[in-house]
Amino acid sequence: MLTLRQIIIYKMRKLFYLTLAACMTVTAMAQNKGPEWLSHAVIYQIYPSSFMDSDDDGIGDITGMIERLDYVQRLGANTIWLCPMFCSAWQDGGYDVTDFYHIDPRFGTDDDMKRLINEIHVRGMRVCLDLVAGHTSDQHPWFKASGQLERNTYTDYYMWTDSIPPDEYRTLERRHRTHDPAIATWGSYGMCDAPRAKYYRKNYFEFQPALNYGYANPDLNDPVQQSIDSPGPQAVRQELRNIISHWFDMGVDGFRVDMASSLIKNDPDKRENIKLWQQMRRWIDERYPRHVLIAEWSQPEQSLEAGFHIDFMIHFGLRGYDALFFPKGAPDCGPYDYCYFDASGLGDATPFITNFTQAYQATRDKGYISIPTSNHDIIRSNYGTRNTVEQLKVKMLFHLTMPGVPCIYYGDEIGMKYQPGLPDKEGSGHRAGSRTPMQWSEGWNAGYSMCDPRMLYLPIDYEGGAISVEAQEQDKNSLLHFTRDLIKLRHQIPALDNDGSWQMLSAPSSPYPMVYQREKDGQRVVVVINPSGKKASAVIPSCSINGKPVIKCGSVSYHGSKQGDHVVAHAFSAAVFQ
Image (cartoon, rainbow, N blue to C red; front, top):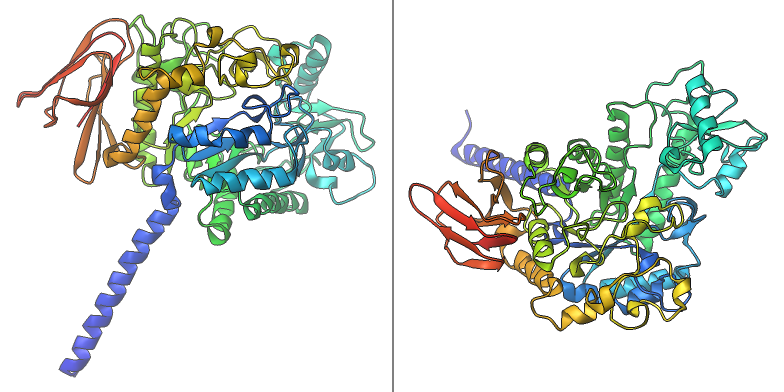
């Protein structure tokens, strides 16, 4: 028989362990989603070659970026993502790496990079680099060593063969014969004159040989297909950890991983790629718990399960981004006659709403979805007939009121234009139109560089200075000031932050305006978006909302009633109601 004292001690211990288990569960959930700073992160993406040139050679550099950090800080962004800065052969804009452990001399030195990291941290911001995890340049010393007959450290870092399937050979031969940029990425193999073998697995362009992470379902009769547990693939995984450690130890706060789902081959459901990144995430959480991984995967249900903290919803993978933003005829456009953010008012947001809702509900406790304003691979917001300040404000309000981590591509905050028809620059193709120099002022070369204009990385079209930071700083109604106000509001209103819940209120059958609700800690806001050139109205469930907007562009009215709230949005208008 237990004494009263023993019973009390037993119950106290039980209560203690139950409380401890509950706390551990909450902590595990928080850790699973990532460090707490992600809740308030606003990313600003920089293409380093185009941001600021300090030595007048026409190409942006680290010193130039340091000179402009105060501008990024004033904008309200607190996390900077830098496109590739490692040593490169520059056949694909830096995504063809020749040395993962050093900064390319075009930008400066490793010491310059340390200074940039420090200057970013001094301002209370964080920095993420671009990591090309799945391939290298064919000029990388690893690849050259791997192609030798004699076994060496890098022999199995790549996948070699003396024979490829007939259809692969026909594709390769056509690429070599026509040099057609439209098929430059087709096929799975490249060809070279290496002593070891004639063909190798590639990842994108032919000059980007795939690193050997192994095959999910290897054909044991094919010597190129090694299992994921083979020594070569395991050595490549360790190399990846070494690269991450090198830069994290230097002070980098995270990586955006290029083509993140492409590492393990013959993995149609991505299960082995998911397991690989889950292992990497556990290792990072143990050693670098305040650091993050951002995926270029565009399948949040897979990538966030894999351990990435953020995944982008862009023009491939999870469909919907193109239905919102890519008009017919635009590069990478989908099968839509009109996009939703089009003046015609004939767009359909259903593909986006359907797919985003499913992904958001499935992942909201695992990580974040980011819907970027644009990026280095896709058209900017200012494109075609979507080119007025009013239209760009509506689009920016959408990006900065959605859940997840917002990402602003440099120059979108001032409405820089996508420039079609530019010459190919370092493998850019049509992407050159989104990689033009940042437009700082109405002066020489838009304040980006004092070089001869013929030396510029890419041409500048800034409409005589109207689309520049300097001009918009002086105009309180500019897109720049509006973007700053939106970011400030996002930081001030908990319901608008990255973790606030999201729910569509308007009906898909009546696409304009789009109306959705954000909520957190008992606080609620309603967002109204009308990117069309026509007045539109909607009746939504009663939300007990004040009819006075906390921020708006154009004319939007909101009238509440017990029978349902009535919203009227004039052409090119948007607002947030609290």
